[in-house]
Image (cartoon, rainbow, N blue to C red; front, side):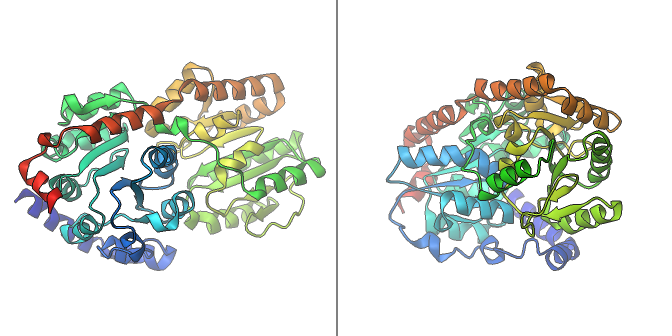
Length: 440
């Protein structure tokens, strides 16, 4: 009965928030794509090859898709007779997953209503469902577990920001988390938090962060084109500011203006986090009178002394390779920060703000290796200027960042081994109703 109340409450919440969703659809075009899939219409592409056993992996957005990329690849090599399908929630995650895993294997995650979930369970009949990080949807977990499929959470984490919410409703989590067979947490703290809200202690293990194993894809052509263009015009140094959010661009651009005083041929490559903000950032650049080109319209024009606004998706990770210094956004304002691993993979000196709660463990690890610089708004301009001017410190900082990444690799293999053990467990450990469901 509690699940009925939850479903009613979810439906009521969706109804009350309908004006917001309509605004997002009409103003920004968000959530329009895949609506029928979210509501339970299984796309035809998933129905082909229905005789294969299925592993269903859910990765919410771009970060999770990148994190599970190596795992998907190893699964396909280890279990060639299995079909691995991937669901996402966001459009950007869907686009990247389609490129990485094949459009025929990618779809939108259904809303957490039984009528939307059951068609997918009937069509796919997954043997294993893998959830990246902490995507705990009550009806989904209940239905999947009841079907007899194994359920695993990989790369599990509970951020500082979301921890109070988990604590507040821990009375509800215990029953829900009983539907999960295996939790692979990023850190000991994440494991302890999972146990404290009701996860069975015997099912919780620490495997590390899959994002340390993310391999760099082949760079898009724009990277080499930009590299040649910057070299030809003698532009530099290059500052790449990635995943920036509202209220971060103004101080970053003022710091860039200061940098131009002593380095008039400097270049900023600026990549806002959310596509719907591209226009606003373009307007800001115009208002500030800073020469700028949009990546989508750039035709090789000189960039020295100006900004390249990255108004495309999926190129930022590769563009960090061009940086002398990289700034990772969502961190100058209280938004929890973003992942600093991508610039570290290129051996680039990294600067981030002091609001990094969502990546506390990663940032803490880099701090312990003296592989990142953390600043507030006041310190930002001086730090950028200092690193640009001090070649020795800048290069050493980037080298330590790369070494930190290399020291943490191997998580994907550990995760796959744990999933293999889970799949090999005797079915007698499943409820009788679940065992019967698998035989239907």
